[in-house]
Length: 309
Image (cartoon, rainbow, N blue to C red; front, side, top):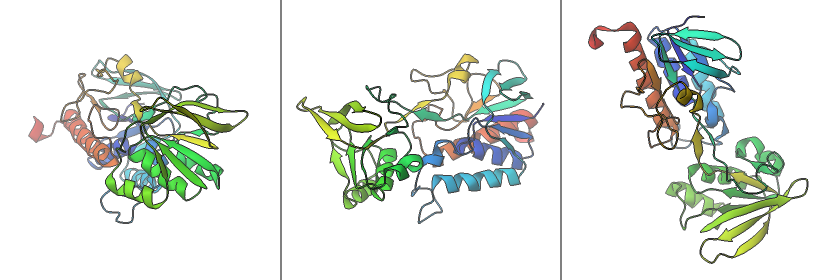
């Protein structure tokens, strides 16, 4: 199947790119290995996205973005995983578990995956008390004691969501202050979330299900056992850039795709947008802006309008 533009990934960057590209008249195909929305689907409430003064859930925002992109002609194929890409020629070839596509340009918007703690018990109890998604798994811990690991906005919003379900929410962070926005920290305090600062999780343990964690103080070295029923890990993300790197796209030392101000990579006709890139601010709003920029650049590459000739 031949199209003008293939967008790999249907998170906020990919969906925004699809909207703008299709509105400009490009034949646009979006390929998403999961469900459209990416990690945005896991955000219980987005309070800092312009235009929604009361906030909006990530799932609701994703649904609106999908609807809008499809309305303007973008074809979004979910549950179709990209397996291989050939990007060095003038024609970009993308192979998936369902077919092969050729395009004149490609936008890589594959986002990130949750970073693991790498401690004993983490993999063993995944799905049995260890979770990376509060919105997905929080209801299983109603009236139970849970621990959130992390200090950024993701950890804070997860803890806030869980505070309305669990009997007690603890939050452990390796530094002496949280990195989350001040407004979120204040709400955590109001909700009674208990902070365990300057500390790290050393082990997650239990029998069939999680029963507790071992927490080490980075100040004293003391290790304590803390009984909990669930552990929600929110310690950042790692870029989903392996396929791109294998296809010759340049990445930095942390694996993020290197882009310029117009979202161009080192390969002609290959653009990247969103959290998978080396842009330092990882937010829904910045991902959307990058997706828009990539779409406009793709239009210029494909149609060669007068202002780019």
